[in-house]
Amino acid sequence: MGHDQTTTAADGTTIAWSRHGTGSPVVLVHGITESASAFDPVTELLAAQHEVVSMDLRGHGESGSGDRYDLEVMTGDVIAVMDAAGVSSPHLIGHSLGGAVVSAVGGVADVASVVDIDQSLQLHGFKENLAPAEPMLRDADQYQSVLDSMFESMQGDLLPAAERERIGSSRRADQEVVLGVWDVILTQPIDEISQVVDMALAGYAHKQTPYLAVFGIDPGDAYGAWLGERISGALIEVWADHGHYPHLVDPERFVDTVSQFWARTTRR
Image (cartoon, rainbow, N blue to C red):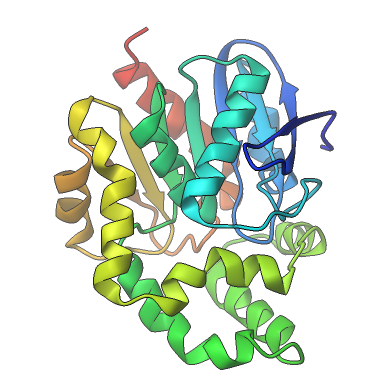
């Protein structure tokens, strides 16, 4: 599904987006190097009952490149699309990088709920995994093979071959963009990274925003307590052995899960 709309972020970056279906609004935000098309099986199911707004983050898909790719500026990109689409209090769903972005949006914007797919917000663990690969990620000759290996290792055994190929074929893996997104993780000490996350989530202390995290890779037993301290009432589901794309391993189960979550928690 291509985009037929664009809007302009605060710094002038062009953000591509589109709308599908009618009903209560849902905004989808994809993972790093991917685009809105990664969500296509889920978008199709959700659009049967919802107005689905999908978008490409800056430096991804059909959107333009920017000078910054940090969490703050990408949060602004999502809010710019929400404004352009005229959606009020939407449900947010984000995968991987998009999960971190929608979590930050939920801290500052009026949203009905937030669903994070397979993105731990305890980023120090990611830093430990990423650090050994940093020299190769910064090397233009090694960058692509290292990135491909990282994605391959996360996909898991249950993701259908056709989905692997579909996701891989639409990647826009710009080295500058990926290093820009990961800059804070690569360059800052763990306590500073944790401070960035805590600041992004600080707004949840002042409101009751329904929040669900669906993991295909177990974030660990302590994650629920950590998340609950920052987002009151946050729920976690772990779909064992589903890998990094649980929503694409079983789109019907995912849409049923979020629909039931919305039915239980939405105020409207």
